[in-house]
Length: 425
Ligand code: PMP
Image (cartoon, rainbow, N blue to C red; front, side, top):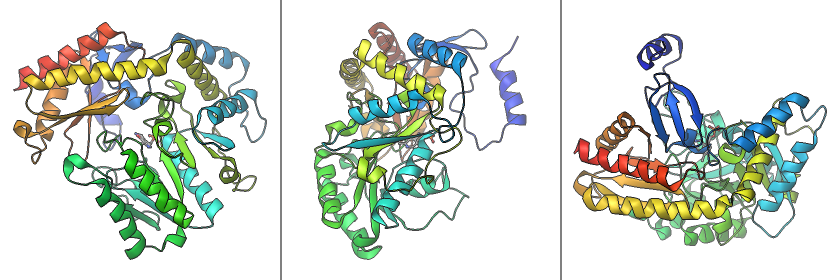
């Protein structure tokens, strides 16, 4: 009989310690928004494999589509012999992406790879090298995306130097004293002090910062950033790796922006648990790199394409965008109610079903409480609820429960959260 403790001991011997693990739990099986560990214990999953399972664990339509694809062919390399699912997925995403202009797409395997490619495409189109990213932003673990990431520990520690020509401006964050005006001013400051605007290829930001703490980019900020971008011929890249595929109530969160991004990076939930990512954007920009300049052996694998097409179909069949909005409202209401008896909850926020609470000592906004955050997350796991923390201060608990989770299960999870707050107090 396998136990979590025995497997943890084997893991510690065999696996590099740099690979983190939020919970000392090994999974046996999973279905929709529930999973069971190797000891038979059941958990409600509010983490969704870090925003990958908007359609839940093992969605029947997604699994069926993948099984069918497995029986036809699993790999040809799209650059050698092409296949229809890749083209169809491009057509679908081109139609889903915001912006009143022709669009094209490209597929890869991971979120970081999508960002890498968005940067390559922006550089090829503009003939410029500079990229401006934002404090608290997270873009991945490759060298370029680590460079873009706006938080040192633990991501960047010991791994530098990173590629040059990357600069950081302030992300607006009213809760922590950075107004939209401050943030826009800091972009102008970068263009004054660090790199001339005529050498900047793109601004890159998340519509809602994910790892950074679920801070929503205000519409006025996006509008102001786009105005600066247009003035200088700079492109706008939306990193929708975490916000995309319906998490925020629209297929892409940037559909809710007052202006359309030139390029969107997408990954995670777009294929419901199978590794595929993509860049979708302005056709003229996407076509800037020459033939052979983009791709990858496994990039846009047939399995990933089949899964992604099934996810898009599940969204239509099950009206999951409306569900995302309704679920978000349910979570916000439940968390606000929870905050009434848990004074450490200093903020409840989100966009669609991308929802979080932020914890402070006694609710004092000057004192982020990472320790309490850790204890609540651990207590909830003991009580059968998988939560994830995040945030620059490590004091945010984020909810990424599958959109397909029934209300009763969501409410059960919220009750476990409330009980966990009461227990650790
Ligand atoms: N961008 C954002 C906004 C993300 O949240 C992540 C993953 N957490 C990435 C990029 C990197 O994606 P991946 O881990 O698939 O490379």
